[in-house]
Image 1 (cartoon, rainbow, N blue to C red):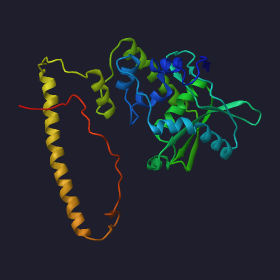
Image 2: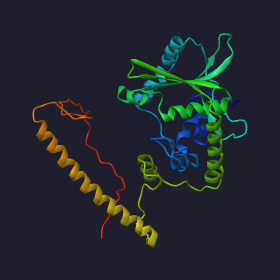
Image 3: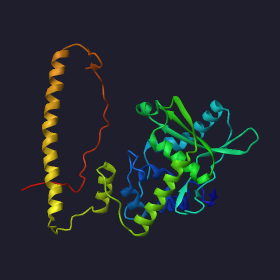
Length: 297
């Protein structure tokens, strides 16, 4: 482990994280993140887009509850915790950094592992039913790579009421994959300023909107290969529309079968048509300018 002396949440910490591959980026670089992509990581590190600032109430709750979750885990596991070491970097790849939440102590007070705490809403409890989600697992493995420790634990407070946690041992094969992927990404994409392939994720849609917020009035002539992309998109759009119509028809036919009944039962499934009350926060009317992709002839 190579400490940098940079304290969490300090201006220096934010700046260093923006310009580095972090432990939380690892899942994206391995193509195993639901929320971010290599393209988004590249755009942030190269300064083309600003890093998203977590200013939601959920993010604030995570910060405020961090100590409480750590204390609860410590009590349930029987292991004491040492404070975060702050921002650390890999001994040979100084662009690979992370900030472990805490460090796990043994009965003699020696540091033996890494602890990572999470908070999440009750609607995500299914994701933790069989252990931590992939992103959390890979983040913890990245911390084990950065610290050189052999074991770690990731805990989550779900819906403010349920504690779920799991141990993870360092995986040497995965550690090699993480390091080779991070190094290749840095050399091929960051140093050469060559963006990785874009994905169809909403995250990449958001990145593109930030990269190109205003149309400049010019026109692009598509190559034959690029035209094929448009044709494929149009074909898929037609198929999706047809499938959505079929899906809607089947759902209405199923509702007609259920009638006033709440539950339908099959040999290997159930269907529920229930009454639910949903509350929507009122929002003031406002104009938002954005670029919209349209297709025509």
